[in-house]
Length: 311
Image 1 (cartoon, rainbow, N blue to C red):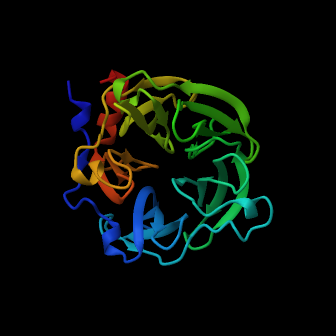
Image 2 (cartoon, rainbow, N blue to C red):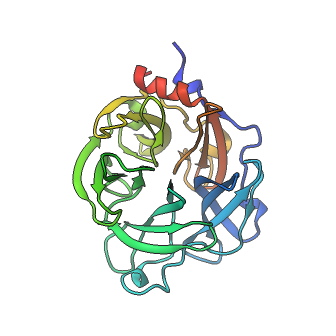
């Protein structure tokens, strides 16, 4: 039986993007990946020494390794009409899902006076212009992730109630139009394995011939210290409420210096992945210790099989 902890291989050029290469930048972390016109696009969470907030920048790459970061902020909500004008600019952990020719972006955001975070739905077709659509979750919900197509005539998303410290599980909800959401169902709670003992959170599901593959993060706490690892869950294609399997072992856990030491120590964190069915490849871009951007690759089918076999 293959070892699930060996299925992802870190790229030898890691970390691919680090703040030391960009004057004035204190953090570049938790990327959300997509493919656009044969280019790899990352929505990057970035923080600057001269600002208390964070913002989203777009990075593009021809080869998926060497990236050019746009010098403009991509998501700006402060100049939008109510209720978006109360949203602050500490915008992190976007999730991107392509449906048709549109890239939908789910963004957890804070507010100046109200509970945080809620999730804002926006969209783009070119990663140049951004259009806000609606707030689609109540607080606290951090990590909401869209499925890339309708199932049984409905849109679906994974939710992660709760934010920050404390218990965090994954729920499922559905919508007729991407705006009005309901039919909430509990899907998966933490504690089914040691590396995900405290809380878990989803990323956008990937369609495979075996089911919907969802890369998740899990948190365990040891002596008051949190450790963030990555694993996977497989959902039924026609009934995403049904879990086919899940990895009992982690796929990736903090082991390298750039994952262990940073702004938040002992963290590997993903907001999505890029799948290539023809190459049987999964490219997992992830944040290391809330400081830098890294890449790990593996076999799409092996990871799905690991979920089914629960290894």
